[in-house]
Length: 289
Image 1 (cartoon, one colour):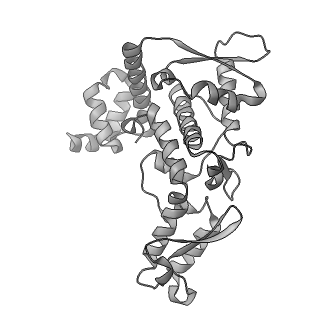
Image 2 (cartoon, helix red, strand yellow):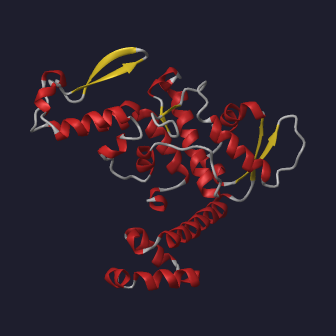
Image 3 (cartoon, rainbow, N blue to C red):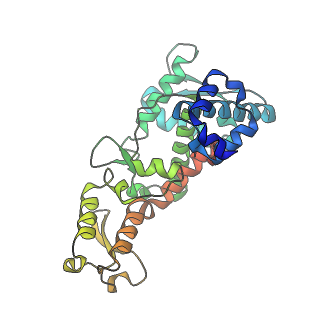
């Protein structure tokens, strides 16, 4: 069956766009297991069908109701977090209606759209210390210094952000926020590559490429990574007894992989895990991969 689909890929994609009723549950399961079958437009169509089915099941199991939010325009992130952090997960899949404090108006969709826009900007408010700008300045990644928050609160904040992003995707809302490529790849459960460091930390990426292309033993580098934590320089061992292990031409690839893993994930593991948990609370892995 799979061989047949690959051999007739163009014809099948054209047929799907003309007649969407062919996308039944059996077909969905086949495509999810072999996503290369579909072109992008067909995948997007399948995504919408799967999400509608997913939300209909939630309504069938839990009923249909609205979640009313009352927020101050200049405190959208904080007010929204306080009102949503205790609601049940299934309630996130219901319709949100928004009212801005001291403003008249009935939410017929426009206020909710504005709420999504304002909250997506509030995520990066430096006062919350949740995200930092990458070196390129147009994308963001979790802030290692967000540990200034109480740990439980920090986890709740990142889980909230993850759920908010998932909610926006489900509802087709455009957000004014852009993450580094590595975070998107983790959302999709894709493996991280050295090239993913480039938009995150171009200087480290450049130094690792130099090491791989030259004699690493001339650099006198041990298996440690120098990092600034609360304005204090610290050497982080990348493996047990890393400070006593020299990087050689034989093990330099391992060193680069460990730096990649530490910089993109290990040093912000708690934040990333909470974000991904919140995101996948609303969008299961099998619907986004």
